[in-house]
Image (tube, rainbow, N blue to C red; front, top):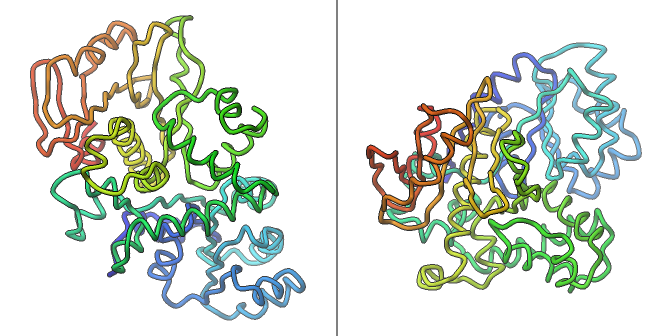
Amino acid sequence: MLINRILMPHLLELAKSFPAIAIMGPRQSGKTTLAKQAFPHYAYVTLEDLDMRMAAQEDPRSFFDTYAKKDGLIIDEIQEVPELLSYMQGIIDQAHKPGRFIITGSQHFLMYEKITQTLAGRIALLTLLPLSVDELKEANLLPDTIEPLLIKGFYPRLYSQIMPVQIWYANYISTYVEKDVRQILNISDVVKFQKFIKLCAARVGNLINYADLARDCGITPHTAKDWISVLEASFIIKIVTPYHNNFSKRLVKSPKLYFYDTALICALLGIKTEEDLLIHPFKGAIFESFVMSELFKHSFNKAELPNLYFWRDTQGKEIDCIIEKAFGVTIPIEIKARKTIVENFFETGSQWKSISNQPTTSTYIIYSGNETVHRKTGTAISWKNISEFIDSL
């Protein structure tokens, strides 16, 4: 089943102006499918193919000449041969042809470094995360309640084919996550890295303490930082920083850790059923990670960079999410995994009005119920309506 992606019109529009478009995102997020659907007449090559990779490495000029007369060229997993970008620069500078190259990659930092060196001003960079709630809703694949969605996750393959979720994620972790990160960092101790990923899952929604994480895993804090950086660059986890305006000197400075896909968290924590999730102590943190991921998807799907933060002081007062709009305007959002709305949900949002000196700011809650509810103290938004809510701001 082909699911329409919200990023499609932005990809097509950018291809009218830029000679190259890069679609970045985690493995299996649908990058190749999107590129082929958007540009069905383009030639397609994947650098995961060993023969194709060798041909591109050994004779890049001949590689590009092979496809010179085609409408365009899709190059999959460009990070396998990043030096191709330098040759693309020469081709682009010889003849500016909008939409000539569509490239995909699963490791953002390798692409970004090369792009800034060679293709600045010639390439547009897009990010495609796994499926969003809106995309599942349009395809009539959204469940009535949140729990089965958190366990199944958002990777397209799980919706286009019938397969056991736990087996798919176990293979995803070993085939992609461990392979990619180990390849980049040359990790020799597989067992320690497996433990490290599970420790990250157990810290979802919490402040990162690299020293504690390193001690629990038996590695150095420097190694822990390196492994976190690569997991983030591979679009497995997302690090969210505290809001940068210092309304008080007594603010925490540590970032928080989230996963882009909740089923990956569940797989790492051994959560297999809805019943497991409902009684699990990390249910609230998993739901919070889901909401943050949806907020990131909303921005990336509009080809925009997200401005998402959190706020916490040393006394424990916290706003789960701060959206920064233009001119320093902030939108405070609390995230609650409960299905029942209670008045104290809105307390911290009310406090933010005085902290930020923005008395007209509304208070918002995103919760796991199915109805959006308006009250005098604020608005509770259903998990099903996150994108509609963000668009209305």
